[in-house]
Amino acid sequence: ITKNSIFPTMGREFLEQPTITKLGIVVVALGFLYNIGMTILGGRKTVINLVMLTGLTGLAVLFLFSFYNPDNLVKDKFYWWWVVHLWVEGVWELILGSILAFVLIRLTGVDREVIEKWLYIIIAMTLITGVVGTGHHYYWIGTPKYWQWWGSVFSAMEPIPFFMMTLFAFNMVNRRRREHPNQAATLWALGTSVMAFLGAGVWGFLHTLAPVNYYTHGTQITAAHGHLAFYGAYVMIVLTMISYAMPKLRGQEAADPRAQVLEMWSFWFMTVSMVFITLFLTGAGILQVWLQRYSENPLPFMVVQEKISLFYWLREIAGLVFLAGVVMYVLSFFVKGGERAMATAAAEPAG
Image (cartoon, rainbow, N blue to C red; front, side, top):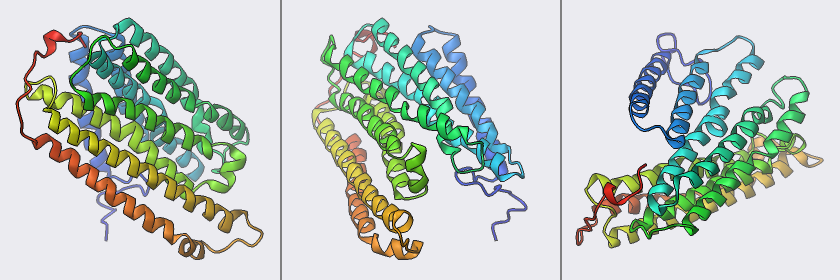
């Protein structure tokens, strides 16, 4: 039915793109990397754009492991995580940190040297904890037992760079030397640091230690962590950049105040609803662990799913609120009002 013999998917979760699609992704990624790389190398080289280039290079290189599909299932899962985990808690944190640093320089006017020192420390902690921290995915796939120690110790430290990123963002905003009119972008920048810390850091830590993960892996606890981490570390930094760049593309320094108000309402709708989605999934996960894995008389999977279905309905309601926030965000780009054209790049620190 799927014509897998013609466009083989290799049957791997998250990497299920047909091979020809994977090849297309590689071509596009290399083209994008070449474009960005030549732009950076041909212009002013800063710590921020070199960290960005390093992250993008790592992202492209690590994706190549999606083509490696050994017959041994243990080896398959071992290298599968080199894409799935090291994209998130490896190279993407470099990209996240560099984008956040760039936006904060533009919004706050804080000296580049101060921001770059913070970035050095954050990136160092990211690489130290994130790379070896991949071991928390190796607990139960047939790897040597020492991964339970290595994975637990280094994974427990993974919240540190995310917490440092939160301190970094708020510290830079508090030390700002100018009051930038784009308040919506500032809100998104602060929000992404907080939600990335909560989602990837705190909720990741909740089930990262091997004795705990023995009961929680593959439950709704994992889903709760995944939802909040993806929203905080991926979605929000993209929306931050859009919020900053869109007025620039229209020849303005900031959107009309009424548009910003609507956009900031969308921020709170999406963020608060995502927190509730995470809490509902966490509640479902705790009950699932107790009924299905920890109790003396564990219940079958489908019986447990029926008992925790209320949490799924609550999560659905929160998801509809999130959708309303997305609609508000899109509509904010179409709010008309007095044009707020201002001096652009000349009035800002160089990026």
